[in-house]
Length: 187
Image (cartoon, rainbow, N blue to C red; front, top):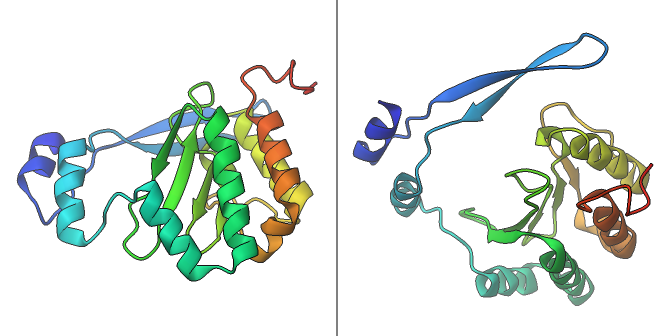
């Protein structure tokens, strides 16, 4: 029903949610919502109407160069190049005002562990990743940048904080997102 309505109503988005329960070894329980019915056709049509669009690599880097000084622009390019070599897929964002890129790793899950925006903001998305990757990403955000994870939001690292630590960030991501952490030096 929700898929049908979503495809028929061009100015309204209808979504079905599944609430999945997760339990910790300590007995705590969390309920996490997951969208079930968003179809590519409906998303594309609604994007055209809302002004959202899929950013291409060229458009993204044009916006990066327009917004950022050369050192930050070069750091965004270097991070993009580094993650594109290890990611299963690399998708452009759909923002109306700024672009983003989102590397995805098949062995980690369907969602991107990081998002980098054309204004230089870096989102470490440990909050929505399943264990053990989410916990490792939150810990890396704390160790590298002093960012304490929020239960519901990404760890947002401003460009002036992550650019000087770009190589350490790339090394941490390579280690944390390795298909077999035991071979990548993880305990």
